Image 1 (cartoon, rainbow, N blue to C red):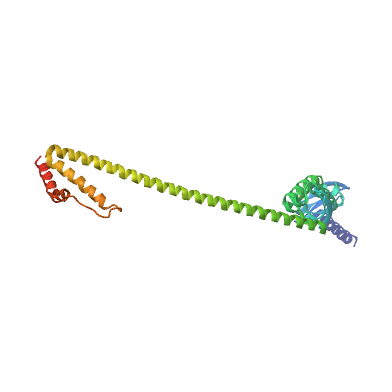
Image 2: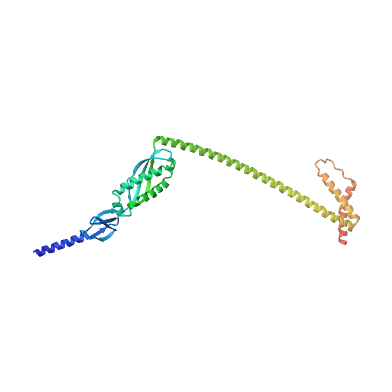
Amino acid sequence: MLFQIFLVSLSALILLTLYLAIRVVPQSKVFVIERFGKYIKTLESGLSVIIPFVDRVAHNVDILERQLPRFEISVITKDNVEVGLVSTVFFRVLDASKSVYRIKNIDSAVENTAISVIRSAAGKLELDDLQSSRESMNNEIRDRLSKAAEIWGVEVTRTEILDVLVDEQTKDSQRQQLNAERERRATIATAEGLKRSTELNADARLYEAEKIADAVKITADADAYAIKVKAEADAEQTTVVGKAIKDGGQPAVNFEIMKRQVDGLTALASSGQSKTLVIPSDVTKALGSLELLMGALSDNKNSS
C-alpha cells in the first residue's frame, strides 16, 4: 500500500516537473525568464525547456506591432498660432528584456515622448506648412522618436498626424488668405495670357513681314534674272548679227535695221497712249521684204 502511494506520488512529481520544465511560446510572444529573481534569458517562439522550481516565466511580452490610442495635444506653431494635433504612434518591441526592466509602462513612455517630439517639430513650422507637410513631419517625428525609444528596446514603425484642429477665427483668416491668393493667381494668369497673346500677335506680324520680304526678294531676283537673260540674249544677238554682217554683207545690215524698225512699231502700237498709228511706206516695204532677207541670210550662212 505504501509502495503504491509512493509510485503515485513519484509519478505526480515527474508530471509536475515536466509541466514546469516545458514551455511552449506562441509565435506572437516571447517569454522573459528569471532564475531566483534575476534575468537569465528570453525564450523565442516554439518549444523550450527551463529548470523547474528554479526558473520561472517572469514576463509574457507581446512582440506584435501595436498602436497607441489616438491622443490630442495643443501646440503653438512658428507663426504663433495655437492648434490641436490628433496623433497616434505605431511601435513594436525588439528587445523584451529592455522593455520590461528599463521602463515600467512602455505604452505611457512612448506616448509621453511622442508628445514632446511632436510639439518640438510642430513649433518649427508655420500653420500652412504644418497642414501641407504632414508626411515629412511624420517622418521626422518617427525618426526622432525611434532614436529616443531605442533605450527601451522599442522600434517606432510609424507616426501619424491624423488631424489639425484650428478655431473658427483662424479658419476665417485662412479663408480670407485663400481667397486673396486665388485672386492674385487669377490676376497673374490674366496678365500672362495677355502677354502671351501680344507675343503671338507680334510673332504673326513678324512672320508676315518676313514672308513679304521673301516675296520682294524673289521678285527682285526674278527681275534681275530676266534682265540678265535679256542682256545675254542681246549680246548673243549682237554677236550673231556681227557675224552675219561679216559673212553676209549688206543684206544682214538691212535685216537688222528693218528688225529694229518692226520692234519699235510693235512697242508703239502696244502703248496705251497711242490712238492713231501712221506707218511709213518704207517700213511696210520692210515688212514685206523681211522674209526675203531672212532667207538670204540663211542661204549666206549655209554657203559659208
